[in-house]
Length: 249
Image (cartoon, rainbow, N blue to C red; front, side, top):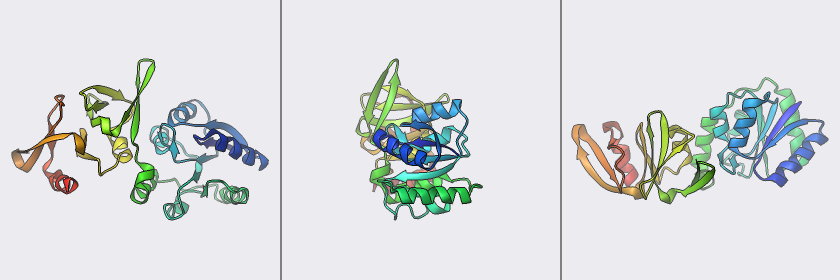
C-alpha cells in the first residue's frame, strides 16, 4: 500500500513514517507545505492513502485539494479535539489526534483496508465545520507573496482588501500596494476571519479596519471607500446590504 504523509512538523512526519513502515506500508513521500504537496501531486502517481495534517506552514491543507483532483483516501492527523472532529468519521477513513498513538494508527489502517471504496470527502463541509468550532485555530493571520526571487509576508492588519481583476487575485495593503496572488477570492474567503473580512461582492473581500467611509448608492446599495484604495469602486449589492450591516454590528 502506497501512502503519503503531509505534515509541516518534520520530527512528527519522520516519526509517523517510522510507524507506517513498521506496518509494512510504503511511504512514497513526506510533504511539509501546500506548495510542496501541489507540486508533488502534479508530477507523481497519487497514493492509496494520505495522512493529512490540517494546518501547514503556508496555509490550510484544503488548498491542496482545491488545486489537485485527488481520489486518495484520507486519515486526518491533527491537534484538534474530538468535538471539532465529530463529523470526520462520516467523510474520512479516520482521524488521529497528536501525538499519534501506535495502536490507534494500526486500527485506522485496518479500517482503511475494510473501506477501500472510500466515499469522496466533502472538504468544504469539513472546512466550514472547523471554522465554526475552532475559528482561532483555522483562520490565517498572515499571507506570503512571491515577489521576484523573494517572499514577502503580510499580516491581516496590513491588508486593506483582496480583489479580483482580469482573472487575477490581488492583495492590497494599507499603504496602497498591490500584489498578485496564486489563489482565488473563494479560497481566501474561507481562510480569513469573518469578523475581520467581508465579501462585499464577487470582486472584493474587504477588511473592516480599512473602511474609511460608507455612502448610500443607487438601488438601495452601498458604496465603500477604503483608505487610499483607488483601483476600483466597491459596491455592496442590494442582496448583501443587510448582511453587511449585521457584520458592522
